Length: 168
Image 1 (cartoon, rainbow, N blue to C red):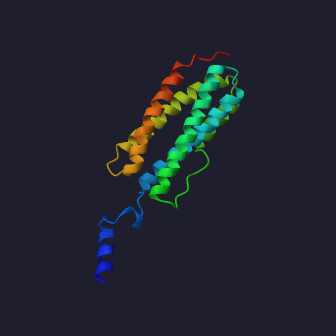
Image 2: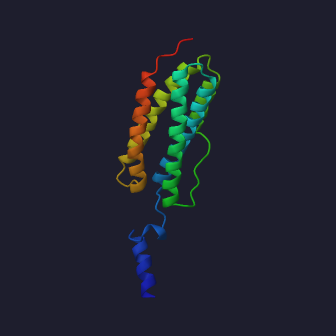
Image 3: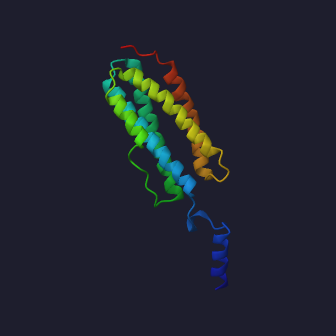
């Protein structure tokens, strides 16, 4: 009985190892959902750009974005599974992501639209990740993953900015 009381007290005090309690806060879960939706958007936008571009540089960039974000989705899934195996990542995009995909699908200049979307979405993703990293109560494993991924986003942003602006 005393052992069970100690375990309950330790759980309430936050001293129980990960396997015994929920590790992810609502703040962590919001970040996870937003990160998963951002990855899905980037993959879908890159696939559309690759399919519709005639510019080899844009196609190479699109393929790299799709590959990077597919890998990042796996990292996120793995980190989440380690922390909360019951949590399922969304497989769709946010309403904003869907509007961007629709604009890309309907664009007369896919290259220019894709380049501009990648610049703005990389900046937004970097802000989202940095905001999460700056939270003192952020999950340590997710925080470390986010810090590592920021380097990739910075490179993607630089590469998007270095693409020759597309002309019609």
